[in-house]
Image (cartoon, rainbow, N blue to C red; front, side):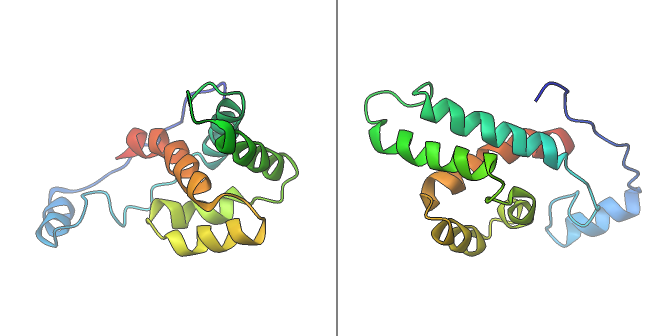
Length: 127
């Protein structure tokens, strides 16, 4: 990822903000905000490479390195469709992620953690 995330201007009236907050929802829920999916996917690949290289985990990295390498390969071979998973990850829906991980024989817990981490900068940029 070489470019920063691009954030579009969002117009939200006071009435819209009040209505949303009265419903006890996050103020930007339903605003139709688009995330830079490609940047999040690239970041996911960089994160899995970092785990594979042992950069992010210290003493107990053995099983995580192999699992991260499998995730890297699935991303590189385009078997892991992060664009399909992103809406589920953003919504906190673990089941579809677990099903895809199982079908690709990937570590579901590591995939979930890396995917959530990859989406956080994009979500912080717009929320």
